[in-house]
Image (cartoon, rainbow, N blue to C red):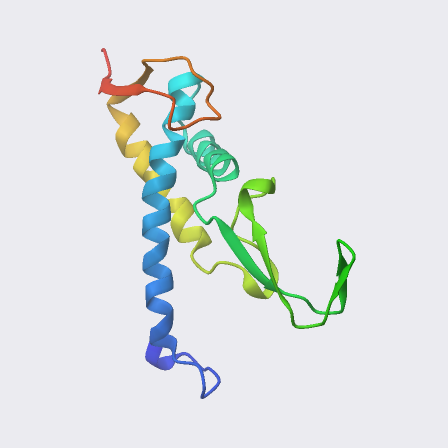
Length: 153
């Protein structure tokens, strides 16, 4: 499929493969972090709710610490004017959005990462339950302690 994709001669499609594989790192981290949500807040485990847990985990705890953007016009910020084409870093922990971005810089692995993380949660929770061992703030995913145990029948 990569060989048949039309691109600019300066673009090497095989260079996209590491970006797609990077989505699997994010999917694993996100699935683990998303397990803190059913540990603290009981709820249904159907696909729609699991996907919502994944999206909420991504919103609360972004896997990408910063997003780089180019200014498209002179931009005034804190008394300084940055020329068009300047690079700006957006620290994702200060935003309230899922870090897949949008527009020309949208993450091509968004659907893959969401599907993978949701399916991981579904597989883990199919015959197991998540039990909170501590009741610290669910905003601190490092502070929430939980166990994944076989579901009682």
